[in-house]
Length: 218
Image (cartoon, rainbow, N blue to C red; front, side):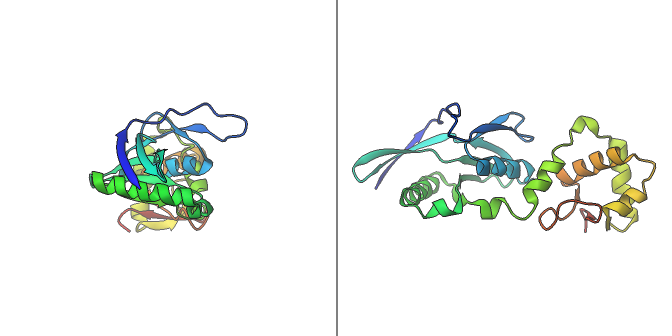
């Protein structure tokens, strides 16, 4: 198998009635990011939420390769740069599709390309992306816009959490800040969680009044 390394992103075609395509408004890249499956869409949500990710692109490059005498093109799904200055190529695939021969060939091509460019190549499936309630909770957190938050209220929440030794339930934290309306409390709490200024378990359960809220030092 011969591999030729080429730059050049793929032009995303408009979706047809038989395909699922769309664009996600990235909270990190401040623009619409295309996706061609709901699994890719959910991965974009994880990239936005991951504090170690500083930059990402969708299908930014093309890899030409020769397989069984035929010229082929492969467009890896995502190029990701993290805070450790390393770059990664991610291929998003449904787990059952990772066993298909054509995809196994693409994975080999992607690994060869990445190794040549000093990058890591990672195949990621729904088992990695859709862990427990993570995507549902991220959707809830991202309903909040920064414009609806208040630095004063966020400071009160963080300070009160410190007073409660950095660990309490959402309901108890809210009860100790009863002068703040429920809507205002939720908006600011969710923003603090989304921006990793405080923590809670987003995988095991849907965020609720009994969720344990932790300060970042816990």
